[in-house]
Image 1: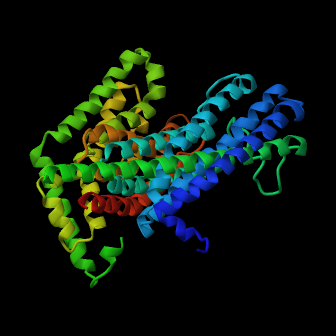
Image 2: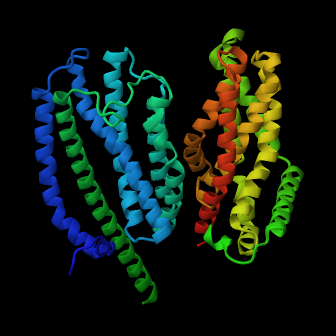
Image 3: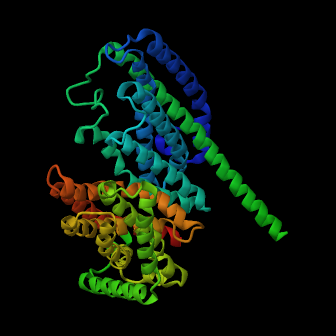
Amino acid sequence: MTFSLTNLANPSRFLTFAGAVIPWLAALTVILLGIGLYQAFFVAPTDYQQGETVRIMYIHVPAAWVGMGCYAVIAIAALGTLIWRHPLADVAAKAAAPIGATFTLVILVTGSLWGKPMWGTYWVWDARLTSLLVLFLLYLGLIALWQSIEDPGRAGRAAAILALVGAVNLPIIKFSVDWWNTLHQPASVFRAGGPTIDPALLTPLFVMGGAFLALFVLLHLIAMRAEILRRRVRVLQQTQVAQAALS
Amino acid sequence: MPESWRGPCRGRRDVKAALALLRRDIALAFREGGAIGVALGFYLVVVAIAPFGLGPDMNLLARVAPGLLWIALLLAALLSADRIFHNDYEDGSLDALAMGPLPLAAVAASKSLAHWVTTCVPLALLAPVLGLLLNFPIDAIPILVLAMLVGTPAVSFIAGIGASLTLGLRRSGLLLALLVLPLYVPVLIFGVSTISAAVTGPGSPWPPFLMLCAISLASMVLAPLAAAAALRNSFR
């Protein structure tokens, strides 16, 4: 059997694939997190302006990448649900939502902890913070919609529609610091003309970014596997009830 | 949506059918009464209890008036939003409409428009009276009403998405508020900044006003497509 992504559309093959990949991913996550955290806390120099608090960046910024990237995953999976009726698409979207919500909460919490020493306040209603709070609320709305519709198929399609409507917010978050002059600092890593951060600070940041990405993929695969198994249990229970009713 | 694109072009007949549906929904809403009165009363109550919470300082009230009027309007409009499709869903006429030749997106658009005419327009027209209670400057009242009339189509059409997603669910009203309120943030921001710019400056109120127009137009075009997809999903 040749390996291709379409093979994974079959939930059973996906389960085998996930079972094989998860240990390796877990190892990779632990190694990257180890290296990244060591570099972030012991190797990276302190910032000339921000001192030790700059180290919050190594949690805050990768969490922001993952928290927003996760919504992009949900939006792409929503397309998969609505256009191609891909059997795993709404499993992927449903599994991603709580993970994305958690990472977004991490962004908001670390951001306010960083904001207190830097800006003198835990929270300001600036464009980047507010649009991220809206992202968090969108995640909560998606989770609530999944919770309140009984039939998984219908829930998946409804959530997919909502996810696509909410995707309008993503570019607003990304460009909020460029469009509005607010307290949050402007883009300094992914910008036209290259990053404005010193390589000594940037390398650990990218290692942490890789570690968070690996962590996200790992959690996502585990959550997807759990969701597929949950649906199988549901089907088994339904057939059992049907058989009991017949006999 | 693809299903409705197929088949012979019925442009003029579709427009006629959508207008007939709009007239029917508006007539039903007015004759049934109740809903509009409740929304207006809710608007009045929310604005009236604000001074008890904020204190009766007239300068403070004038400063927060634009935001307060907008927030109360959004809440009052949400109050009747789950009725956009609900009555027709209950008595089966929504099924009949979905089977009919009129594209489902046009059905959704005309129902959202009916919500705008019967809820948001009365609310926007009540706003000046409530503005006076909050010490809102009289010469800025035309722009207050204008901004609300221009911004509220987005409110009704986005509420249409929420109403179609939560159709037939338990506690649909609460869920609707959770889904839709975050999507109202842009309307709120530009609606309030239009009015604030007109009252206190600095700068002209027209750039945020044009953004408000853009948001309303975009949601009038795109939201019915999402609502139609959600309606089709709820029939399955």
